[in-house]
Image 1 (spheres, rainbow, N blue to C red):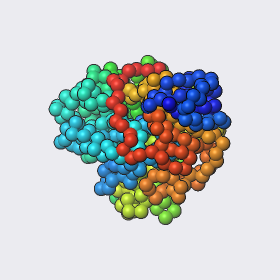
Image 2 (tube, one colour):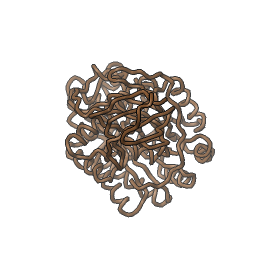
Image 3 (cartoon, rainbow, N blue to C red):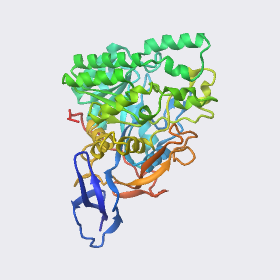
Image 4 (spheres, rainbow, N blue to C red):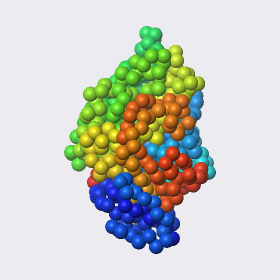
Length: 463
């Protein structure tokens, strides 16, 4: 016998229907208007939406950064993700300079195995591109189920690569059937501005944003697009924050290029005034790229609505204010970059997007699940509700009103950048491959239940 989710409104990226869903084992086996109970365990979903489990394409769990390590590992981070309605994360493997890509990947497998409560896949962040590392790219695609690679145009003298390296990686990845992601900021310019600010005694969190202007992001995005065009390769621009970068992506797509853009919840509802919060509280909002002027928010919302931005990730990268963010109390450049967002990604988009009339339900599902699964080779196993797909399902109560807070969230961190925001809508029950992992306010899953899911090669898709 299976599990019968009865009476809910199923929402996918393309359809909305009142129907029952039957789960047997780990998969969806039937979708119909009225499936007989026949001894199945019944889960009532009347008055609820039935969404595909969220696919978060951008997380950093158990990751070293700036002399510390993110506060959430694969146990706490994936449990928190599940509470928010996410059932699959794609985490970034940090490749150390001098190491092999395969060894770095194995390190991340060890971090996740036995801890992840939901399913996971990996991108690999390339720290250097020696010839032997370049040769590994097609091998990881063919043998390891890793089909996306990230390079940084920022963080000079650490992660930043030059244009030659980025171009070579784009060309190799394109030939191998992989998708290159870029962190698009002009790291050389930022390095000059940071040094000048510190020399002038400008050490507060607000100078993090002032030394990383939107023009630095816009210029790097345009440059990355041109390099990808010359390499005849697809490109995915992560965490887009501003009009300059978003417009560049839209313009490239109008020219028929396989360029995709992602934004994150923090850039839709937070802005650069948050850096002015007293008592060093502005440090909670230090992330890269930084929060922008509020005027950029409506640009991003319109791009999401009109399918000019395709991905929606959390960029989960949690650090405690006490003991971690405080490392930069006297020097903003030493504040660990990142924020805890994995749990609230879907809730923010639902309330400020669907409830406030900016996007529809189908677009919500496309952005939180389907597009991300398609772009990174997980569809149709993940990202939709269909016969034969994994039974990753969220029963969503659209009526619940709640206040986001560090006091009530499930992330292992002492702050929440959405603190005090009141949102409507909540994941009520969450299933991962047919197993219920969230039941109301209770985690009923198991650390270690999550499986690694290999990604298929990149295939250009219409999103």
